[in-house]
Image (cartoon, rainbow, N blue to C red; front, side, top):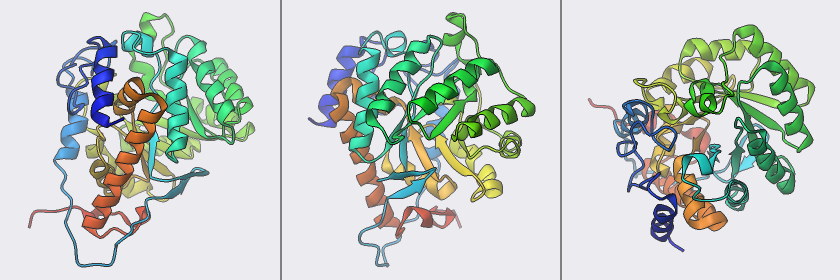
Length: 344
């Protein structure tokens, strides 16, 4: 099985709901929400890609970095590379029933672990989606997935936190950016923003269950500082793949300001526009501790199942390793702005 074969099969199964473009950059699917596109003009999705393309690495070859170390420990996870799979749920709804939800979640969760990384499991209006993901988490054991929950009303959040703890999860993330999802409103279960006091209550509820807690969807230093004050263990800097608000910057544009203030105090993950191991290294150099990748893994799962997910993860890790050699970066923790090319 090759990545090319996986892409061909995924294109057939997606039935036009995803074109499986050579580079998943949001141009062909602009405005296709529900679907895999970006909302409105699709500019926010496109900006994730173009922001990374505007950043260049600094080639350095006079060094002794022959076998760089891509492994990291983060949030209690030991990962083969600084990579996690972003949660995507509702495959039948967004991808023309290209794959049954349970089969998709199994391929993602088990394929990730086969590659030495972890996957996020999704939440959705029908609680069945979360139940499927948590079933995979329980089957894997040892907290080898990271469940995501939507910013519902507090009582449902507490119920879902308890479900996560019961499934053996160790780390939970709330994708606060999903408040803008059209699909949730169409299903009659909208999610809502939270103020600082509500965030603190959610963090406290997670702590009582022994869970580490992250917030996803932070795109400003102001919100990042509020989350830190609320006691979160980490952030996922993300614009939800450009699916919730048109006309916002790419994640790579927002990351540096947050990293300059909070790097080393809480964990900083990023999700948005990462398509290669080179992109991973760019994000690390900009201040991320790890990255998340979503849509390309959905294609890998649809076209190649568990094996396809593992193959794509290993491809990204191999590309990252090569990029580290070419920039003289010995380990993930050593990545910083010195790896980036600056015009004189």
